[in-house]
Length: 151
Image (tube, rainbow, N blue to C red; front, side, top):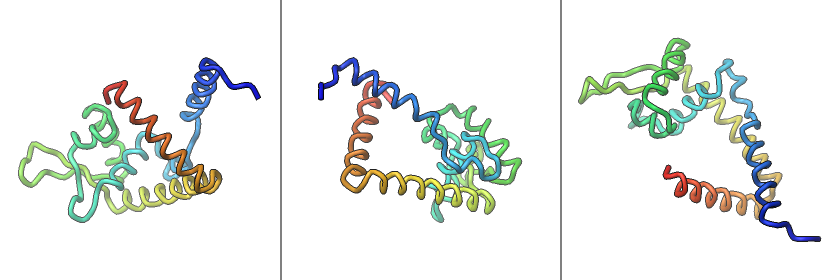
């Protein structure tokens, strides 16, 4: 079998990476939420706990890598639908914190369960050795692009 040239490898990798945005997880089927809104709910679910029931808009901005105005744009419909709530900061009333409502927590938990099942399916499909290699290589790729793009 002939070894691929660098251009052929780059072309194959480009085609593969371009397919990732087209992959769809099932969570957007829950409550008919757009992807950006369910990603915010998931991010809140993964970053909140009993000691930290809400986080600031600037923290959300950093975690999602979008502007604070973009965060506000996402929070408004989620608040209207009863998934999140705005809370005043106890030490600084100028700071708005965002937390999940009971409905938001239940929805985020359901979405997280679906995603975990799908990712477990991927790991099972790859097998333990290839799954670990995939994670290691994907981590190195993210590290490379973070350095290159200054993220």
